[in-house]
Length: 380
Image 1 (spheres, rainbow, N blue to C red):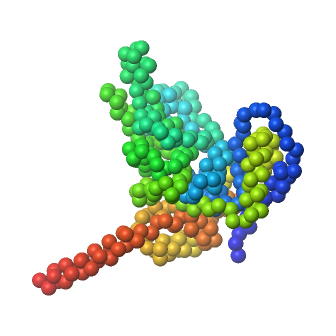
Image 2 (cartoon, rainbow, N blue to C red):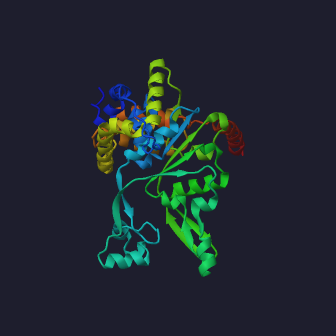
Image 3 (cartoon, rainbow, N blue to C red):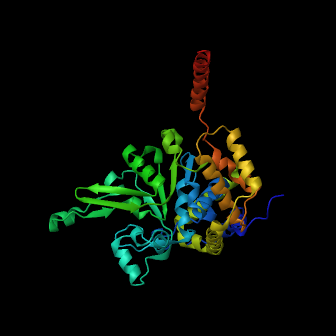
């Protein structure tokens, strides 16, 4: 028997608000759209919405990759997360080194920069609570935009080399979204993957040598018609969602009318969903708060390991994603222990596209060769 759903998961399955919005009178104020499309106004696409919320609750799932054709609300869903993001502790370090009180508690004063060590000595705060942000990476971003480059104005006016932090440093403790990730420049993608794997990166420009913290949840979207991702890039995304168009004609028409309503009056649409959006945001914050205390039950552990083994997946990121997603799913239900049902709820998202037929054939061929060589060695 599955555990009772939390308000977070119940809200995802409710569509009653849509009918109320569609009956509202039209009002054209002649103003530019200023409100994002409400997350809960997205019709259907439950798997996509669940994956995004799990990544927000627990960035350790390794991010989300949305794969689908154009016009299936991938980008809309990601941008609509801005009203749901929880608060996190962010550094106030003037050097953008990510210094916090927790770093000093764990490693002493040498674990932070000199300025922050001095501030700590004067009992000044090194961090603050702030809402997570959504940082979007432009498709035409250059490497210096991403990792940071020399401030040309300072260099020309003051004859000094000063580094400006890049998008990766700005994305620390936030969400980093890459639309059309399969079309991104290779060097830029490699820099992002390296930062995502280590949680920091180093920029060297002449005499300047700075290391920035860059711990972010990576979200990517792509249309497979425009090209595939390299295997090493695909492996960096924890949850993978196949986003298909809505099959139900009534749902498609409802999505159409809501899209028109958003174009006419985005503020009224947001207002209609404001109460439910606030409730969902509160549940996400509660889930993020209890996440550190969520543990894996023996049945959840056994089932998870069994699924990975039966699927013949080599990458250990499969277990990381599967178990961290299950922990987030349990936290969303307000529980501090995962169950086998949590594993089943996130298994498809976590294990999809992790099998490699080419790699499996390679290992099988190698086993034949190894057996032949072992027979020769044994024969000697």
